[in-house]
Image (cartoon, rainbow, N blue to C red; front, top):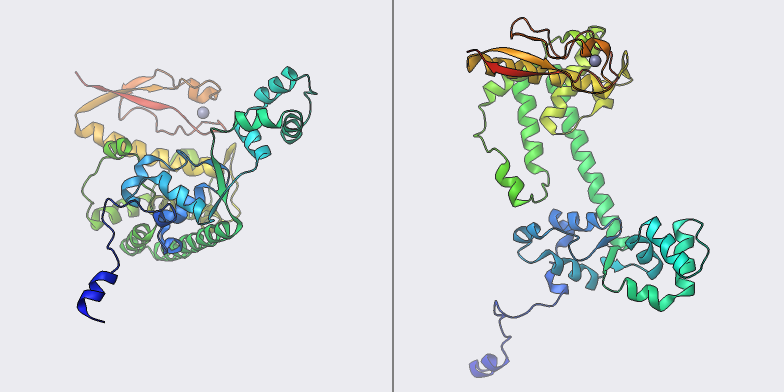
Length: 345
Ligand SMILES: [Zn+2]
């Protein structure tokens, strides 16, 4: 074949303006793309195809998210939902009742029954009512891919947790931080809203020595409100807190197996009280640095215990204020007092 022939038979190269088909809006490698799987994950339950994936996912996808969703429909990764499901999804129980009574139909029954009655009596009307809404969900095969991906993510977390715990058990804080950093970097992070992103304080990463020192300090803290803990429970609690902070998710079953809490507080509340104490200690240090000398305890929560209520509006120098969370608190939700700092003038 001569050069001219080849030139005449050449495949036209797509110009950037050339419209791509909806199916082409999804890359062939979608099953290896966490962003695309995360889109499918959103459709594990029924969702609108329009706006079902926020616009700000666009820059990551390189194309408007709605086109990707339509592409997934075209490729059979998503499927449109049936009319009964559509009617059920688009209306509240009260709306269904109103539509039934307007048509002189029996009002009672479950949502599915009510919907069936409405469609039997007025199929065209129901079709018209939901015509504007385009709803979809994962097809079984796409669902399978999403579930396998989720299982793999859980496995990664599991492995990272085990490694972090064994490093912390050996009090190797730097090693624990490094393992967690690698894990968090490898994880999928869904796009965030630009406004939220702008509000996030992007401080320079702190040196690992400092982070390790902070973490080591946690393992020596003894908030008085948790005085009833046994040594093993203290240890488990520190681990719980560290895993939660380092990996972004708590793993209570691994850190404190069998622990159900102390007094009126369940295990999650106990963990929150340690976190409260650590945060309060950090605040105190900052206030002192700023020259703040006094503060007032505020306890304006309805249902707080008598011990906490008695602290309300107590004003004193920072050193003389009782430790928070308050040791005598008996609230099931834990102590919710806080200190309003004031400038020492
Ligand atoms: Zn209380």
